Amino acid sequence: MRVHEKKEKGECGMTARILDGTKIRDAIFGELKDEVAILASTGIRPGLAAVLVGKNPASEIYVKSKIAACQQLGMGSGLIAPAASASTAELLAIVEDLNRDNDTDGILIQLPLPGQVDTKRVLEAVDPAKDVDGFHPVNLGRLVSGRPGLVACTPAGCMEILRRNEIAIEGANAVVLGRSDIVGKPMALLLMHANATVTICHSKTKDLAEVVRRADIVVAAMGKAGFVEADWIRAGAAVIDVGTNRVTDAREAERLFRNFPARLEKFRAKGNALVGDVHPDAVNVAGAITPVPGGVGPMTITMLMSNTVKAARMRRAKAIPRTISAGGPASSGGR
Ligand code: GUN
Image 1 (tube, rainbow, N blue to C red):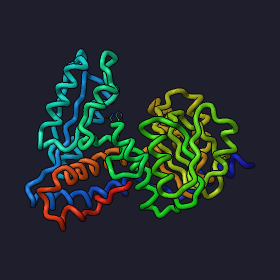
Image 2: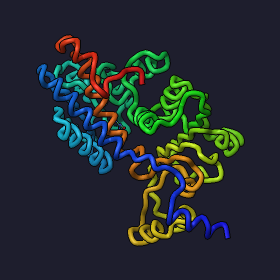
Image 3: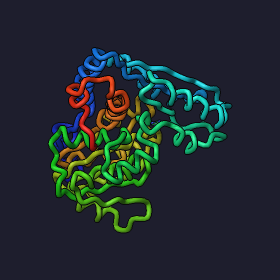
Image 4: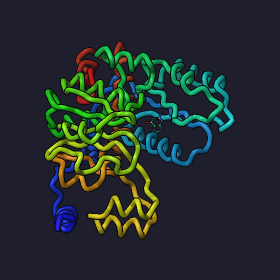
């Protein structure tokens, strides 16, 4: 019985190699610590300023982890927390101050901003040299034209996962599901620059399953729990699952965890579970797959730290002896 066979596989021995983001995070943190120490020896301490507007519990958790990561790496960090009623003009003034502050190498405007704020205007006010989120149109333009710049953290993290696991990108058919400015579009550009043949899929794509079936590399970033079915995945393909969806509906959990009794049990006990955009059964088809949680998730903060160190080096390079500014493990441009 096929379902039973799958169940045995899913529970007892997964076929896909698990692409562990926490391991890669630890390796990159080790490299960044060394680089921060080298910069410190020249009097430079990379610093990140986070702007957190109002009281959004999820944003508060994200910002707290970003500041904790700075502390862990010996970097400077600061939190500016205007009230939820802050206007666009107030935020522009904060950004202006941070642009001028020499100790601030990276500016992070935690999103979403409250409805009364013109988010695009605020993001565009950030000095592109300090835009460690890679959201500024200047950095996006640099990425399009293959110039060095700061690249959005989640897609940069996906590339690190592929590269550090030695997954062949050159000549591969890569399918990116989702076309957001923050993930899908930069992801497709990064894969294209790495010589993959890239297809971007979205809500109007025809024969989606067939398109995905041709992929050697699938990057799922459309924000729908278990949307990519296991039988869309080509046997042996590499799957990068960017989705982190909190499932609370019992029937949905049964659909997703039908072959994973332990996960279903855990869902029933907790009343919720985190699931990616790819159906968990894909682990029995793919050659390599990122878990959710523990795959792409840890890479976003990691690349934010990497971008902040890179921004410090690029902007304050004059102060660093040439041998140091040219080196550094996480320093290679052209991501
Ligand atoms: N809100 C959710 N994710 C992110 C992110 O990566 N960067 C910023 N600035 N805000 C976010």
